[in-house]
Image 1 (cartoon, one colour):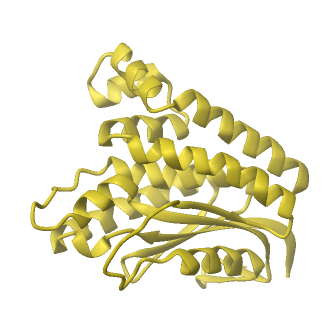
Image 2 (cartoon, helix red, strand yellow):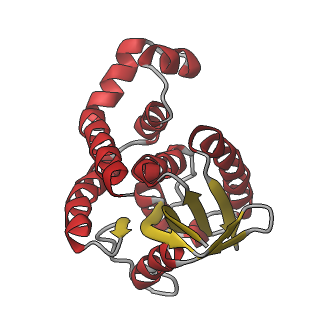
Length: 230
C-alpha cells in the first residue's frame, strides 16, 4: 500500500456523441500523444476508457491543477467542425471535458498492470458521476472543474479558484486554448510564436485575452498549497 497522497483526475467528455466517427478517432489519437507529453513532464499515468472517459494519476499532487488545465486546454484547442443540425457540437467546443481531481491515497497503483485503486480515484470518480450529463436531453452545465479531498477547508479554497478558471476557460477560443496549453507545458512566448508561426506580440495578446496571468497564479498557489500537505 502506498501511504503517500496522489491526485487522480477523472475526465468525462461533454457532448461526445456530437462528434463524427472520424473526429472521435482523431481525438483519441491526439489524446494518446497528450498522455505521452504529460508523462514526460509530470510523470503521470493516463488511460482512455470507452473513448469518452479518461483517468490520469498525478504522483506529485502539487502538479494536479497544471495537469488538469493542460488536458482541458489541449482538448479545447482541437478544431471540431460545428454542425448546424447539432448544437451539442458548440457545447463540446465551449466546455470540452468535465474534470475532477481527487486527492488521497492509492491502495494499489501499478502502471504495467493498468491498476488504479484507492481513495483518490474513488473521489474523482464520484465527483464526475454526480455531474454527468449522459443520457440527458437538456444539458445544463454550470461547472466543469472539481476537486475533492478529506480536507473540507482545502476543498472550499480550491473550489473558489477553479470556479473562476472554469469561467475563463469557457470563453477561450481554440487558438487561445492552444497558447494556454503550450504555456502550461512550460514554453516561452518566443518558443510558442515559433511553433505556431505567428508573432510574439500575437501570442502575448492571446495570453492576455484568455487570462493567463490569473491562471498562472492559480497554478502556483495550488502547487504551493498542495506541496505543504501532500
